[in-house]
Amino acid sequence: KPIAMQIHNDFLYILGAQHNIIEKLNATNGKIVSHIELNTEGFSTGLNKISNTNIAIVTDIKKNIYSLIDLENSTLIKSYALNIPLKDIIITNKVKLFD
Image (cartoon, rainbow, N blue to C red; front, side, top):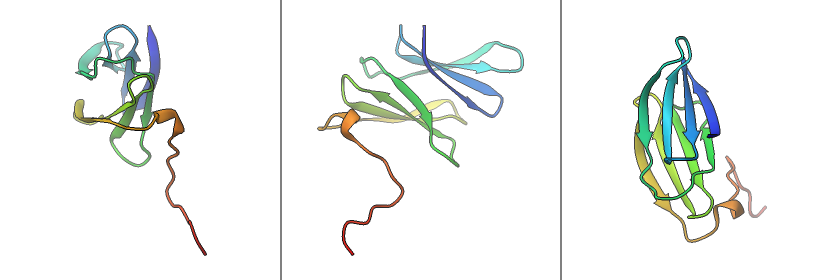
């Protein structure tokens, strides 16, 4: 059962619920060409491409882990555990705290 999907070049990346892996599907012929194992032992809930890069971020809300995926090479870059809930994080390009 797919949780999230992301298109990059001619490939569809599918984050599945069952095995905590991302399947890379060739969008032109419909065949699975590779898998990216997350190895977080959690339940990943989101897959989002970072604009203007070949990198996607995979989030695991229950274990407060996020993983960076290299979409071009179909590899896991690294997984990071956080001390605060992922749902409380806001990502922005620029923050102005004081005048």
